[in-house]
Length: 268
Ligand SMILES: [Zn+2]
Image (cartoon, rainbow, N blue to C red; front, side):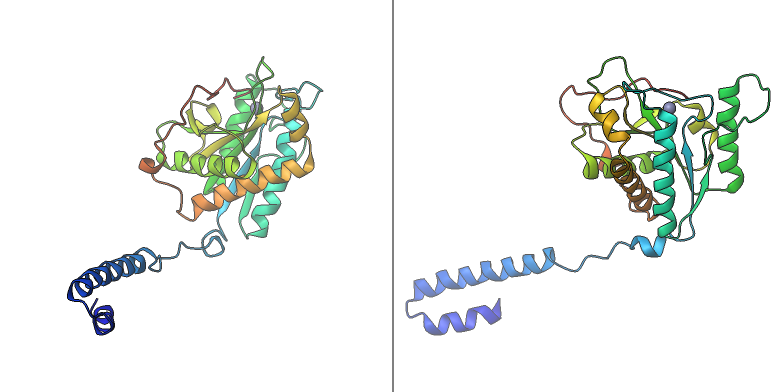
């Protein structure tokens, strides 16, 4: 303030004008001070490169083997889509020095050459056990949605109900999916799913899109779109692992309108 006032008073002859300009200089000083405060250097968020290497992520491509999952309108199988995206996601995570545990790497489930009752339930139990025994930091299950009506589309992420860490993970992934692949009004939602209940680590299930929507089915089988999905999911995982996922208060937000929200899930 003082610095501004001196030179102004020197060049202004009239007292009233001088006072007015002095007031203006006070305002300018306040403005500059506020601007400096507003533009002050922010404490930098830890970059992913410092926080994610060495962490362990379980990737669970849904279905496999005798269980194709949902079938698209032109015959695209959920089990093939989830495995393709899982492979892309694995590569991206490895590139950032993140370890991965894949629950399957081929077209099979975790029940091979055995006779078990409740095959699907046992398959899910083994997928969770694999991740739990490896002590993973994060568990991400990949699925594709299907619904009787062809109009629904868009990726949506689910989390274990009542688990704040899982919710943060799911919100981080859903946010990245919406930002990188939108338009998509879906939000991360809680869900009571066997696979999420059985996993000890923060766990999310990503429904990457609707195979029952003809346009989305075509996208989901496109390797370039699969890579974009994987990149968005990887980004969400990095945000979570870096501790940058938004706390509950910042995400207690529901979009206005009556657009589609959660839908019945295929599989688990
Ligand atoms: Zn599924």
